[in-house]
Image (cartoon, rainbow, N blue to C red):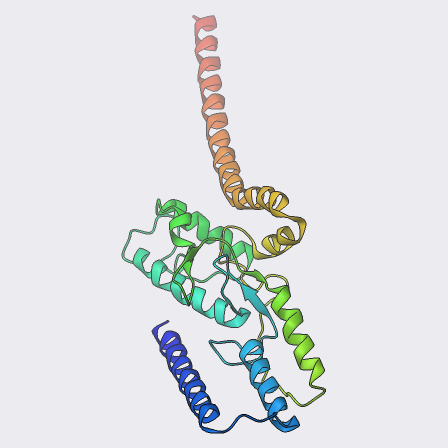
Length: 254
């Protein structure tokens, strides 16, 4: 995380120096109508400032936005959130691990099964997942417990600018292996695919869907506990019935 922030600060400093140098050069030269090449260079600079991720400097092929309003690419968000989660999980390592191995509560989940198992480990450690599955924004340090959603407005703007340049702009696209519909799977109590769907349906529908999905892992865990408890009670009842029957037989023989 520190390396990412340091790289971000370096890039921001370089961009600020370039801006100041360009401003000084503009003030030093007499004003004149820009040529086609100069205008094109300005357009390219504007496209790069909007179209590239401010963290990795690659083209925003998949741009996501946080509730605080800041945007970045899915890969950078995924890496940063995994780093933050790993630092929190390591605090559980010295604890006593009941009914699970030490590695199970240190593994970054990427599937629904792994995520459900991590929630079970939290329950065994008596840890509230809401205090663990919360992350910070790169820019403003605002905390969020909801997965980022696609920034469709910025996506349309970037695609439109790139198309208008007709091949003059060749972006550097970062290769990724994240799921198309759920790049943040296993990191949030609210599944990111449901958040994205809810954002298109409206706030009311999103809130209902999120509440239902967030409680489903706990419902599953409660159902398993109830099932185990029911089986135990059934065995106890059966045992009591058997002992009662033997008592009755002894009384009859007497």
